[in-house]
Image (cartoon, rainbow, N blue to C red; front, side, top):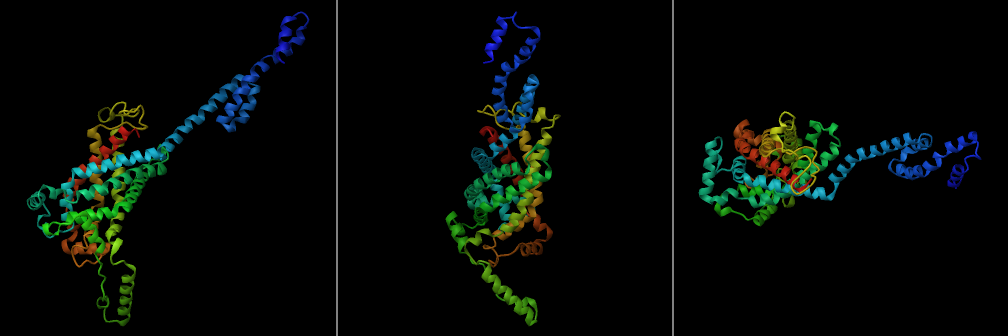
Length: 436
């Protein structure tokens, strides 16, 4: 209806007085812009529900309202980027891809150092046949030669099948848990602190240990055996561990002195222990679980913290031209966009950051690892009694002194540095190739 008066005013110019034409001129832009605004208003309200007050003032200042509406519609898009990234991290596709990358990384790292891992377990667990080789680098060479002479080259990889069976789910859970926990603990870049990185890595390590510890115990048992007559298969080792019965001291009163009250208390404790602590069965697969859980806090936390921190240093502007792959922050092999927010390190730089992470994390957690190994082989050596952390530590201290907590550390360095470097390298490259 607004078109007819407008056309009439233009056709009959002389019949309209000048004063009366002014209202038509003022009113003319309103009908012509009103439909445009009505079309824009639902879109603006759909993008930003709180922009109703701004849009209501657009009738008075049309061009300003259009600019304001466009500017306000840009803000949700900027804020939605973090939401999209968080949604991608939480998606099932991202979880599966990160788990696959982590599992492959763990298997690659363990395969590289499998012979050293076998020798280190023999040293840590104080195997009587190899106790004479501990304490020197020549002992390492001699131990390797002894294993090859009696068991062949395959003896250096004894227990490796159980290792791969354990390490794939262990590493997969560890790396994917780190990605998920990191996204929750560090929701934005300004909240990324060393403490938060440490907590994310520690929680990821403890989560993976909880689900895969029985496989670790089986692997240690297989690696501990050295005699040809006592070799066990994987199923045989599982049956042996399951059927082992834990002997609890029957008479603790002798250690409590002549007091009848102390003797009665000791008997009560012994009786309660026999009822509460399982003597066999599934509980045997968690020998040494407590020190493992405690040791995983510094090990996994320090490992991830060190790797990420060294990686940040290597990405500094002064070093980036020499340590990063150009254009890797936005592209990946076979993908147009990898979703990575930082450039990929070169092979040498990535291996270096992983090696430093292995060195620092191994040093911080090694004493607890020695205690854990002794507890894990408790059913093979000694009287079969399940020892606690404190009692195992006292046994090591009594037998070898303080040096006993660092037995095999040289081998530990020789093992952990290449293993951690390989694991982080394969994980980062696998993530890059998978586009995550």
